Length: 196
Image 1: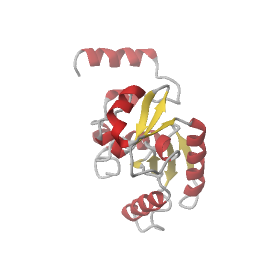
Image 2 (image 1 turned 120 degrees about the vertical axis):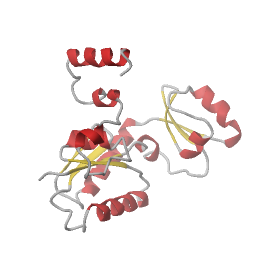
Image 3 (image 1 turned 180 degrees about the vertical axis):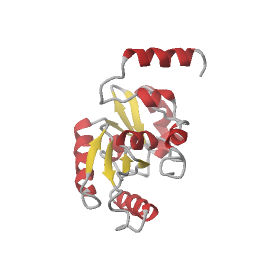
Image 4 (image 1 turned 60 degrees about the vertical axis):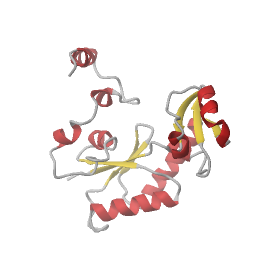
């Protein structure tokens, strides 16, 4: 049975540019906050804010403001993909921010899922990266579940119940695959309008 483990790197735009932990670091794209480290977030910085707001919030902290570098992100993700071959030979890049690993065939080697995920978090931490994980029988569900750390690795709950807490927008916000059909989008819009 196939079992896919999605390693999603939500901080990749930040971590591929800076490992700074002693001062606030903010990644800007078109003068808007795209990503930020914990110190910047704790100071009130949030995604979408403009650069001037960030400068005002952080002026006493000497922040490091960086411009997003998609090429550096892709290079970092490619390096992570190559490193993941040491875990399993069956993997692929996914959604521009993740690496999908087929782990069903290698769980015995790692003495189970808990041992494997603990090792992955430790090894990625040593490389300066944080990830969220999702586990499912298919890649798309694993990626979706990587957005919900509470349910991401829980396999003893039916998939539909694990996916239920995710916002509907997440289910259709697939930014690299073709857009869902228009009828589905209209149905979702109607449900939103009805408050569902």
